[in-house]
Image 1 (tube, one colour):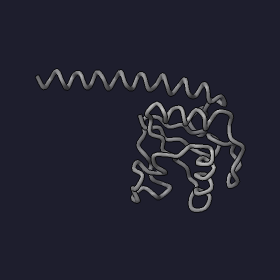
Image 2 (tube, rainbow, N blue to C red):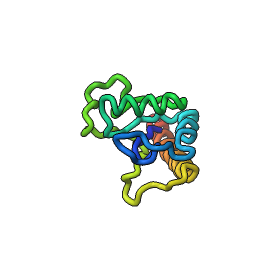
Image 3 (tube, helix red, strand yellow):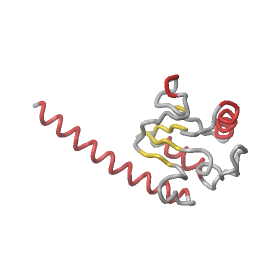
Amino acid sequence: MTIAVDFDGTIVEHKYPEIGKEKPFAIQCLKQLQQEGNRLILFTSREDKLLEDALAFCHQRGLDFYAVNSNQPDDALFKRKTAKVIADIYIDDHNLGGIPDDWGEIYEMVTKQRAEWHAAHQKKKSFFLWRKS
């Protein structure tokens, strides 16, 4: 699955343009999701030096992203901050209703969604295999 995750207010407390304090278990949770095979895209309005600072903050904690503000690591087309990345899940503090403060709860929500996503894709795969025969 592809997961787009915001930085300010999501991974860290919202102190933009400064980098806020890391939200408890945010990095640990994201690293676990990555280890489970999910692609993480950092989807943020930060640009230039502010973006580099955010990436360095995550990297220093062992978290690197598949792509940044893009669907592909080397995709220059989506470097504009107005572009929307395509993901299966978006983790962003500006969701309707916000997000839970507890990253354990966020992890459970993503894990449940991932199980449903896999089940739906298995059905589609089975359907197409059946149709080919």
